[in-house]
Length: 272
Image (cartoon, rainbow, N blue to C red; front, side, top):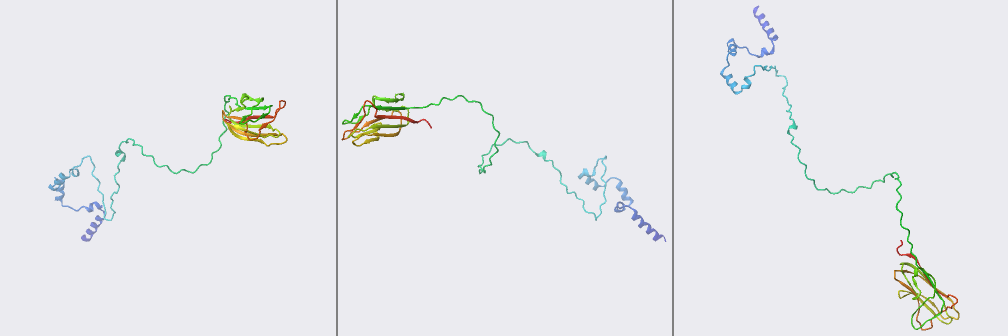
């Protein structure tokens, strides 16, 4: 009866004991006694190779042993060590030189017109301007004496002065002298002579411009000619009888004025 009962008690004790006690093998009393005494030569050699492992601080607590079963998964930590990057950053360097200008891009489309801004304030009154400068030139002369042509060109001289503004027409030479450049209008009126030709020219600087002509006739008539000329300063205009094969004459008498020559400025050259 003692055999089976004793075996049952041993099995019950094994179930109640912790795993740590079961994992350590039983040693004889002699080995346990030797373990409590000085370490063996093998342990001393290990202590010399790794003093930190075998010589601990007496105040330091020994690490707690953990029981690991063969069926538990491995517990290896995969976390990487943390490195502070700010301590590796160097000082700020100097500013570099400016680079070359790049190519210009394409012009964009024109934008829409903006809104009209507010009306500005009224400005101050400006300084008084100069008075408008007007330019004038005019003359009108006549002849009361008849004139017959000779064998050469003859300038028609006038003896009556109707208008001679600023004296631009010379009564002694029978010529108009231009002192105000611009556009002028000239008109010539004569009376023909019976059975004689009337042949005259309006002349500019010695060149014939227009002609006044009347053939021989049994009766005398009034003839006229007009023209517009652009004159520069110091230009000259006058009336001249033409030298012909036949007798050339202009009729007039001492009581009436049958021959007139007039001219005036239409537009000054300096005006817009």
